[in-house]
Image (cartoon, rainbow, N blue to C red; front, side, top):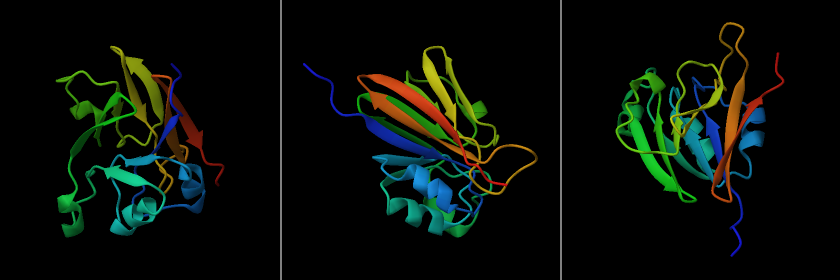
Length: 156
């Protein structure tokens, strides 16, 4: 029995109303795109939906009327792995066994395993904050394993 083809999840967060063409280029070819909050403009979700199915959560800046229909937490299964998405990882309580927790909020890219689950924060793809990088990420599910990748965009 052979494993199926890799399943690619593009992960973006903290766009704050700015969707860079370089970020769209990185997300091209994703089977699914996750936006981990602080979207800032509904047009961002529409642009992402042109590339792939989008799962998004509301962040702390997403307070306008359009954002009310976006959930604070999303759980889903993809390629046999269980994911939970929320804006601030500090709000995650390990109530259920998951394979991956995707979050944003801190603007600091992070990819680490805690208690058997991948905690993945793509950082911020929106306006630069302090000296933090402009980044997003990708999680490839291949042969039953999660292969996370943080991608820094080479921008000034």
